[in-house]
Image 1 (spheres, rainbow, N blue to C red):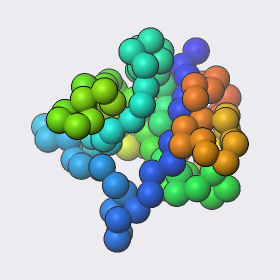
Image 2: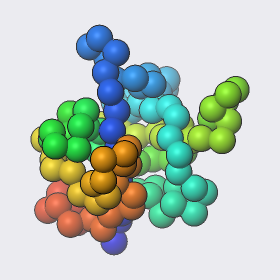
Image 3: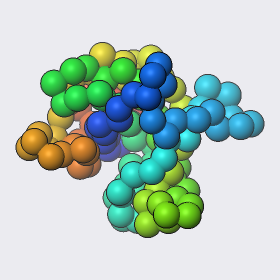
Image 4: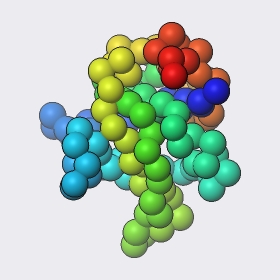
Length: 118
């Protein structure tokens, strides 16, 4: 069963911070730079990512996690998340860690109906 992760991603104007198109991959993006361990990254591939502006607002963007790359420069200890946009990842509620300083839900079990469809 796949896993999922919810992330707080603020906007800079109309765009999400750190988000760019993934060249050569249709409808896919790179999102930089996240604190995700190698072990967690491995379990998230094939799962879902949801980007929220706050934990109390529905996700604005998300999709299927295709992989991770190492960050660069001063973000080398973080990871770039590679994902393919899926509209079913929009307007989803936050699950997982919800304390005031949480920028990530941590890994959560896939339990939304669209997550469990093969």
